[in-house]
Length: 266
Image (cartoon, rainbow, N blue to C red; front, side, top):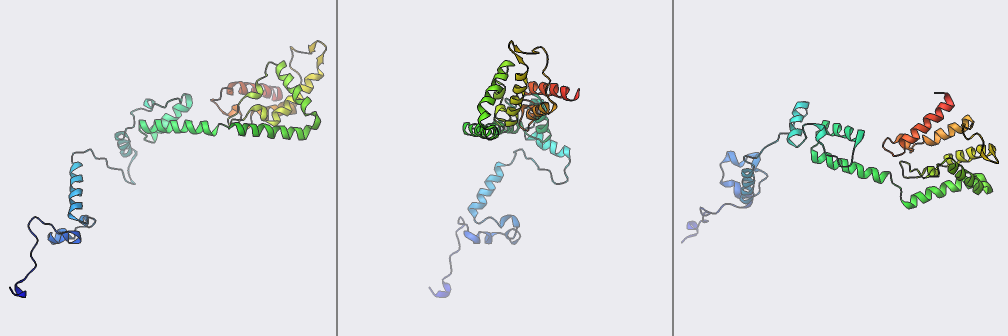
């Protein structure tokens, strides 16, 4: 057989071209189709076709474009699991006004029940972490307050603190300094509050007779500056005064109102 008679045997009918040559067996109008350009082999094309077939009959969700209306987005949110009404959200331990606000915001934002529940839990966990101080941080705050007061009072520190504690006991409020603020610190670690209690103790001490507190049934006449100092301490940044859900919120609010009534006659 001559060299001219020798020719490359054509691919068998069941054998498909491989690699970049697989498109060569297609008609020209298909070879250049953009949808085929990313497919590198017959195997890849087969997989793509199988995946497409799996999607046949499945529910499809079109994402609204830039000019979509609120109604268009509502259709999407509802299909993705947003409840019909905001009150249907389950928010775990979140209750009260905060829960009502959160439900309304979640519904307006199109959150599904699962998304809202997970977000509420994440918010609660963050609040606990942000509002909690470690034992080391609380001790550092206590030491900081004590150091500041010792520097200011010198050798009068111990006596001043004793008088302040006795005053709290006299007015049946020995645990006042143990109230925890929003940042996790204690009210008693607020140096301005401690100074106020000492001043109040000194004033009350002047009214004490041999039989005990004079004028026990009347309110001591405290100076306006001392009253204002007390108001400032109770309305400090991290005070329960600003935290509606704090267990001491109502008590602090009432005390501030009473102090302001003495100051301004409100």
